[in-house]
Length: 242
Image (cartoon, rainbow, N blue to C red; front, side, top):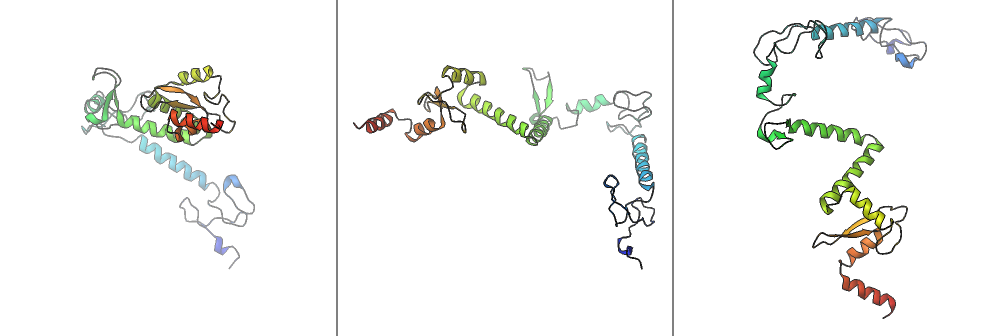
């Protein structure tokens, strides 16, 4: 028995032959010195070629019409509409319209009223699938979360949406008010600190009217006073020693 009997492997192509022991390390080929190789010489290429042949055969195999009529489809006589030359088409000519009569979605989602919307006033114009919209939104969110720049864009968009929903302000309105205050707090007249460079929107909780932009400390102080002008004046008199 040799020293390498415990590391002998069979070729992963399925031929059943034992592979050789790697004499050096080749990362691009997956070799580790002293360990058995995954494939015999050229067998990996033969396996990849066989897999391509199987995929091509399944792609160019005869298929039935996708509308459910049971009729076989025809081969594509030219490369167009996403079909390769000689590939069997998904539908018999004209039968794809039958599918569109059952659903308004290209992916085949249900045409139920809860899953249908329109971008215009009339119900028969610009129909779209709500499930497709949700899937696209989830995919976009995952793409943005994967990068620091994407996460920054998500926070910026969330801030704009919060301003619009809570205060009725657009980003342009916020910037205009900030410029009118010269980038300073409306109470202490100081620019926000570098570690908190945001000016918070202060509004009347009863009427919803925006009063101004405040730094974090002044905004917190108003909240602790309960937005009471009387308490704020008494606090000022107390600090003045009156």
